Amino acid sequence: MIKNIEIRGVHTTVTPELQKYVDNKIGKLDRFTPRHARESVRADVFLKESKNKTKKTCTCEVIMHLPQERIATKESTVNMFAAIDIVEAKLKNRLKKYKDTHGSQKLHRKVLARLRRQTGGQEI
Image 1 (cartoon, rainbow, N blue to C red):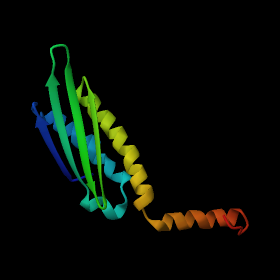
Image 2 (tube, one colour):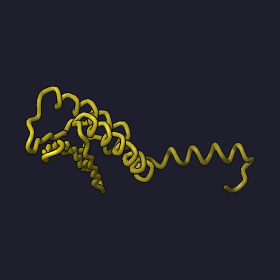
Image 3 (cartoon, helix red, strand yellow):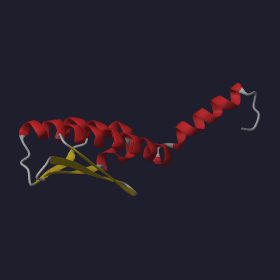
């Protein structure tokens, strides 16, 4: 679980139910980060609500501070919980890419060794 999650509400109050939901959804994303980076991951969550004459718009913006990179995603929908779900899916994809590029090289060496064994030692 990501321990450093800061939740701020802009033009809205952050209820305990909403805070628990954000902690649950965003907190589980640490398994998509490399192990060496898990202690230093920090997430800033901004929950905004704006009302026009015709409709209400809820925006969720998450900025994740990782070693060597900062990942930001933002989504606006009618429901705050739906916005959090969409941001979680976007962050999951971005973190998978981050883990592929900044992850352990041992895994890649093991995969290459297995492929060499399967192909009979030929160059890949």
